[in-house]
Every structure is written in structure tokens, then in C-alpha cells.
Image (cartoon, rainbow, N blue to C red):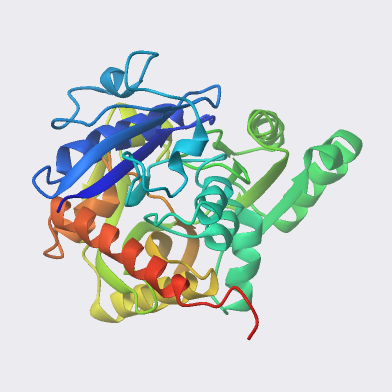
Length: 356
């Protein structure tokens, strides 16, 4: 019997369009002989819409933006486990950014007791907040770049002091980011105090917390992690931006970036990357998938930058490319993630909810 898969995408987030692109790519990778695939679209206003069975891959993202036609609904109660027709066996969340990748939707799916692909509430929330993530990396003993962070309220009260702090504790250039966002949205590179001020104002458009990271003169290396309790790593890949840095436009629109997979690395460096990626995976209590991002200096020092608990599956995405070069095709990767979700859900069902 076919498994009934719900593709959950869109979302009330600045990364709504990225999610649509990911959903389109995944719809093209699924095996429709094994799965009945139902689109579950969250509009940019937060309205849920469940569409009719997909007969095959979507042709474009516009097709995935469900309207108010027949067979569609915006009642979350439809996702409750029932014997009625329409129950979904596994949810595949393809949501990026806040209200999707940060543990909020994962918490809803936990309450509904539905199996879902990817990381749980804790890993998603901690992985979304770059400050919390880096603090946990410190606990795990992972080497990383220096950083400064602050809230919007701190900035409003002590702007000059915070600018002084960045200039004192870090050296130019620095990268300014919203703490709780991904896909390079709101990220700027600053070479001086004026650019820093402008970069912070840009980041504050997207989050109340800002992180300023020390720039690193090194190679940008990524590695994909797959699994639950016993994660495995792919070959590594290298990002080579053809302009300033790997920003949103380079990542999703203009393709103005060279992706080298596998990256040319000494075996000892690769082993460090794989070890640190697995340690990051475990300290965050991850499950399913993670993309771990590193800097490798000329001296072959390995510095972890961040992990992405819901890496994209767009045509420009590194996660599926790295697994493809590791011998795991795109359709097989999707299937393995679905199986990992079911495995994790079954394990959770063994827990007692009542005392003896």
C-alpha cells in the first residue's frame, strides 16, 4: 500500500519563496509509484491549505500556491490522526526560517502525534537561533569564530557602546546577521563602522536579535549529515562565491557561485569536518538531516560556522549534491529521510505516557 505523504511548505516567513522552490524540487524527486503525495501549503499570511492528491511532479511554484478551489481546506484539525479518509502517514516539512524551521511547526506535529521528516522541537529551535547554537557548540568544545550579539532594545539604548564593542572585540570585516533567520536573508558584510551601523539596521528588519561575527579568511566548506542516533556524513563540498560572499541572490537566484563537490581536502581535514559535524549534530539532539558549515583556514584549522537543520533542496542546494556525490541519489535521499522519520516516530511511541 502506498504511503500518504504530506508536503508542508510555504510559511509565514521571509523565506516563503525559498520554501516554494524547495517544495517544487522535492515534488520532482518523489516516487509517485510508492507515495500518494498531498500538498499542504501555508500562505504568507499563515493560512493552511491542503490540496488534492498530486498526480505527478508540480510544473512550477505557482501550481503549488493553492487557492480556494475544491478539495482544499484551511482547517488544521484535518491533520489529527483519525480513521477518516485523508489521514497522512508522514509529513515532509519543507519550511525555512521562523514559523517553520524553528520548532514551532515541529511542536504542532508532535502534539498531533504525526511522523515528520527532520529535526524535532529542540534541535530546530536551537539550530535556528545562531546565538544559542554557538553557545551549545562551545559546550561541545567546537572551535568557532569570535562573535558579539545583542537585542534590538540594547541597540536602541546603547548603539554607540555596541559599535565600540564590535570594533574592540572583532576585526574588520565582520558579518552581520539576524540571529533567527536562514538562507542568507538580511545578512551583510561590513568593512567599517558606518557599514556596520547600516548592516545592523538591515538585520533588525528580520529579527529582534542580531549577531556580528568575525570575518574569516578561509575556504567555505560544507558537509551533509544524515541519520538519527548514528549519523553519517557525506563527502564535503566547497562554496566559491564569484562575488563578495554567498548571499541570498547567489544562493537562490543568479547562481553566481561555484559549487565544488567533492571539495579537494586532505583526508585528515575531512575527518575533522566529519567528526565536528557529528558532534554538532548530537549536541543539538538532531535527527534526520543537517548541513554543517565550516571555514578551513590556510593552516587547515577547522572552524564551525553553523548548522542548518532544514537545508534547501533547490537545484542550487548543496545538501542533495553532496549526497549524490556520496552515492545516494536524490530520490533515494528523500526515501531515506522518510524512513528515518518513521523510525524515530516508532521509537517515541514506545515511551510510556502514564505511570505504572
